[in-house]
Image 1: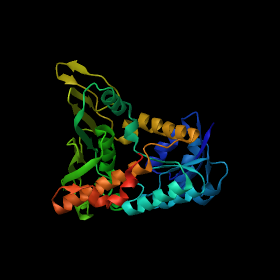
Image 2: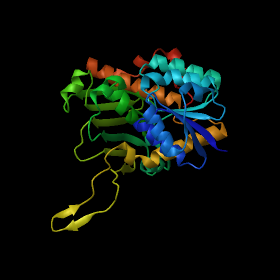
Image 3: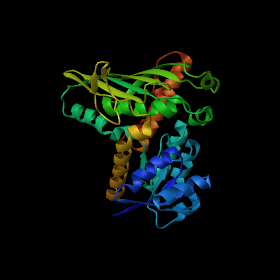
Image 4: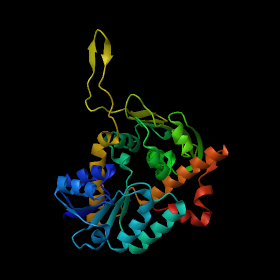
Length: 345
């Protein structure tokens, strides 16, 4: 079976997914849509597909699935539309900036029996997957503490920050999902601190550029997240998991893994410069997992529920920063009657 794709959004992340889809032998990129015609045309020319409107892709009989890479405030509406049209959906995170809007969107997907996968690509990074495999095999015993370091080489434009939902919903959200992925338990309490240390314009836009978060599960396991919008040495992506019998870590990756020794000492090449090169394999494996779910008609993972929980954790962290206290995730997700939303992950 060849899964026929429509791509919504031809920007930076759209280009990443266009490459991943076009490189997969089980996939075909049929059409691309973008509000900027030149962006769509350039990408369509590069991969030999058509330029179509979103409405045309929605109605198309020669498209089985869509990859949504449009601005965040369009995601939930598009998910609902394409779910009702019977298309399988891969959507970049977050589904929306509102927990309640995400809940409503997921109800539509469930009612339609649709396939929805959320783009937490780091779960598919070979190095991070190897860490998860070590945990699953019991090699380090019971997980006790997780440390996640995620620092960007530089901050995005302030105009982007204003629309992205801020560092917690745009950047740290990946780390919230990774913390759940590694801890193996749901997070109960969130404590966070945030500052503006990189660019005062980010603070003027109502956001932060330097964040530290502590997550705790009901059993007492901890995860610590360190984020910064400035890493002068490259794209800093590291994880460490400490367990009852040992520890496992994934170090930073480089385009070339060599070490040079001479009279000046030991040197290694610089880190990857950003996510497009650091996570190339992860994006490819992510699309493969989505195709497998479409072919087998099985639930996709990470799911819409995973997207909802990660957003709730981001909201809890923001509340912690604003109120200077630890925040229960249940304060964000609502009363116990709503707990069923978080089951079946």
